[in-house]
Length: 609
Ligand code: M6R
View 1: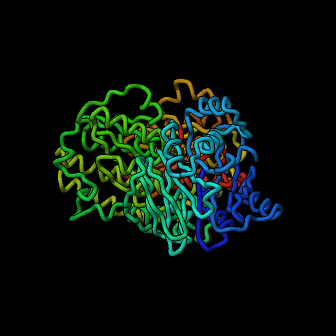
View 2: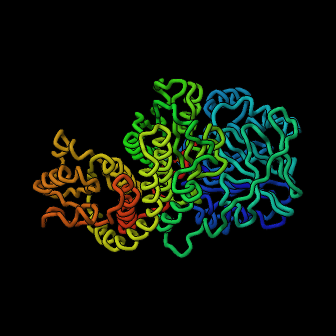
View 3: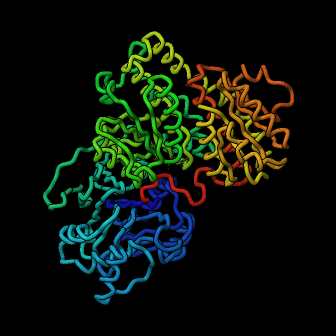
């Protein structure tokens, strides 16, 4: 997704903007640009490509010299990646950067063309720039306000007016934007890591609020242009947390951070050996009457929901439906008053998940958000909220956020099962104490399986397609393994419930096809093993991820490679079993020369539909 930054203060503005943009690279982008006031004129430099290309261009055309400016990394939506479509975009007296999608840009563009305006780019953003210029009445706030009234869709905007060289304006609807403040300087950014080098203090801009930044500070007004006071927030993580700390990539750093991430997420929510979610607004009394649960999310977060379904249904005996947010929101889902809808999201800004949550609320459901990004839209709008305390996740491929989403799903399932009286306190205590041991088990897997995963990954790079198979919880986990591999290695893969193979998919098997099988659930291991034998006898190369207990009982030659993980409580096995799947994906990407942190065509946070 696009990234926005802005700066006003004593430092070299071009340098600050480029440096801040590097901290937003994780969002995915294909072009970059900055605009800076230089001697009261706005100088814009932009280019298709990476920030390195922008830096090269700044060297060749001359870096704008000044102290007030805005910058942008673009992830193309309207119009191909090109210099001309890159941001910033301008009208005669205004220059802007934009994240989001203006849904009614075609009609606005037609209107502006009818008024004699000409357009250089294919973007929806240039329409906003031209509309601001068209409506400009000498008063920036009034102009922004009246343009906002005409825009449909999502936007976060950084705006500079030629007549006001000492100011940057910012506004948002749906798309995230923060305003950072320090002594004598202010910032805008799409996300906190962009400003951490300079300050930890920031304000969260709410929908339709407008911020005016000067070197002396920031003022906010609401959509009626009435001044508002806002709460100053302080980031509780620092640059170190957002940097690679010696790892070659964020993805592997974040895989290694998983034991701590689980610990940080679960420990404050456990009291006297039992789950305690009171600080998240969840009590036994409050949840005991839920009869139906729907979990809505996208991508990896949805896969965490799949594990959640198995665990909640198993322990609390409440039916759980898992839905992809983009499907849920457009198909008139059956949600009744008194149902619980759980929304899982790392970023808390995923457009479809946010819309799905709002729909669930309209239908009278209670909503519970499981979110990583503090103060994000989903976090703020949910009725109940459990933060996954994974810290900033920078790599596009989600790893530590997923594992903390699982951890929260377990805690919630335990609490619900207590509320429903389907789980006794002693049994719950036993499960909680098994959960507390999981960080250690994950550390063990990272340490002991990494070399093997590295080696097996060298065997996968020539494959064109892979299958992941498993049953029950292992099937839910296979979905995540498959997504991880395809997003960073660009190798096609599918996950299948192992028992489904015979109903069609087995025809794909030949001796070119690796099959990754997850087998951690003792009672169904014999069934999965017989599926493995079936595909092996048709030539497939088998990579088996299984418990040490299962490995001991394996007949010779059943699998080509076995990745053993320690046997823990079986309900909790996805927490450890996902780790080799993440490492296989990571090392396959590395072996193929891909950048696993910024996979092609992908964005970290999908804030548009
Ligand atoms: O921020 P969210 O958790 O709502 O994002 C949902 C998906 O876009 C995300 O999990 C995506 O699938 C990841 N890149 C997968 O690694």
